[in-house]
Every structure is written in structure tokens, then in C-alpha cells.
Image 1 (cartoon, rainbow, N blue to C red):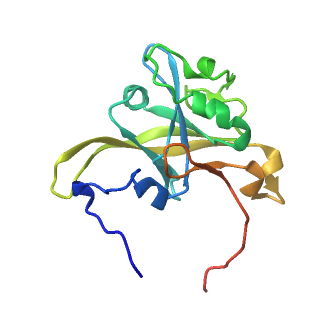
Image 2: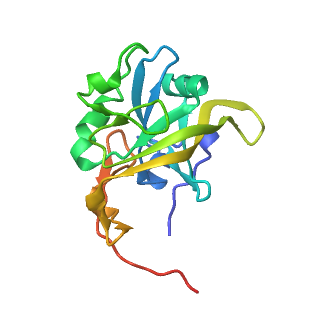
Length: 202
């Protein structure tokens, strides 16, 4: 089997960096936050995932110290909203590079819904939302110990909102939500595809 090998520090030699496409498709961290003056922010992050069961912890990485990270550091709160096929265009609109005083909820034409525990509102149309409190804010570093301009924000999920139709006999139906996932390339997204079942060995 022939292969393409590269050392990232020397460049990949391809038309587009394949790293994002290989580690994918990935769930989208559609993060709502509020600054200390009360201005709302809503932004999608492609480096996002769940990291722990008990307590439930999710996290996302921001390349650069962006409004979302600054807001969460200041207030200690944020909300993750499930990005689904029906909300794909609004999610995409919310990633526009705009000044901090611009409310991306308004920009994307999205209504808010109040959270029950944290002071940050949810995307009203989102089928699932996690209310979160900041647990750790970590600046990433290279293997050599050099600081990287990327910030990992981890939050404990303290409240969960789920649309009732997604609970089938009490079990969450992932496919029914039609979550969208980030692929590689400059514009690749996926809708959750065909499902199959496979049990873990005993």
C-alpha cells in the first residue's frame, strides 16, 4: 500500500490540511455565552466533544482568545446547543466574524429560551441544550512545552433540555435529531447517516 507521509511541523503538501477530515466527522460545539455587560454571543466550534460521564463534562477548543472564551472566563457559564439539519443555515450564520457587541442570536435570526440554572439563554429551536458551568480553562501546549494560541474550555453539564419526541421508550434517538457534523475541507458537513448496532463484549 502506498501512502502519503508528512510531519505537520514541515507542512502537509496537500491542497487542504487533512487533519480535520481524518478526525471526523465531529459534533459541533454551538456555544452560547454572555459577557459581563449582558451582551449575548453564539458561535460554533468544530473541535468539540464529551469527555466524562459523572459528572458530565463537555469541552471545546478555540483557536485564539475569542469572545466566547472571554465571556465564559468572566461569567463561568455557557450553553451548548445541538446543531441539527434544520438549523444548519442559522448555525453557519452565527460563525460570522463580527465585533463583540454584535448579538449572533439576532444576526442569525434565532429566538432565545431561558435556561433554568445558568444565566445564559439557549437557542429556542435547538432540540437539545446543555447548561454548563466552567470547570477548567486550559491553554494548550506543544509536546515541547511551547504555549499554543488555543484554549480548551471544559464545562460541567448542570442542566439538560431534550425535546420529548427524541425520547423513544425513554431512550434518546440520536438519528431522529438529525445532528450535523463537521467534516474536513473548507465547507464539508455531514448529516448523521445510516445506523447500525453493535454490542460491547461482556
